[in-house]
Length: 110
Length: 125
Image (cartoon, rainbow over all chains, first blue to last red; front, side):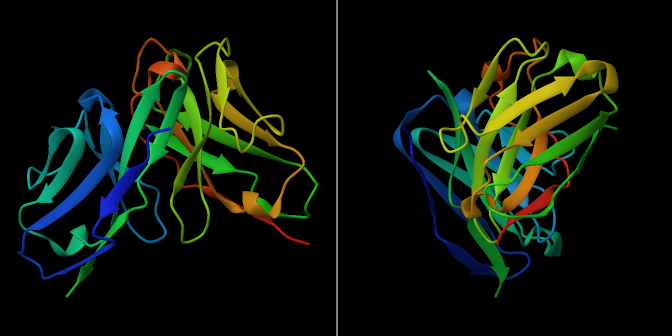
């Protein structure tokens, strides 16, 4: 089973700053099968990035995803007040079908 | 607009049963696979179960296999999760989520979008 480890656990930044979130897999992951979600308190997760680098519909271009193999990154170029939230990476393994999530990175206001 | 609305959560004693529902709208329900994902309060996300468009293929996480049953009614545009032999560790928000693959096979869904708002299941004596 592939384990996803996100770092840091908490990121303390100010609005306007750049956020860089890491997701490391215990084995190589097909980039097509790597996604990122944003979750705000009391809300469901929202898809941000799929296929490692593709923005979902309606996601602002300050969000970008990159990476391959075992190392993936979510970057928020300039933090807006509404971006302070928890972010999860997720991978899909096809044999057998299994979906696993990282433990999350909280982006909080400094 | 795609909407998913869960219902059926509540407080239940260990060993008892509960049935969750998810009402879908805004898309052709029987074209897509559907999933349940849960989140214990303050914790991370765990995929629970998925079902293909015609109920022909179904999968479960090991943690719920043999206790939970996923089903769907395409005529009612609804997804269900029958949870039996509930345990304290099943306490979580349960989200239904749509898969992106238009062939409707759950095992081809690389991600989930969108998710419903969730329903809370609390298992406690």
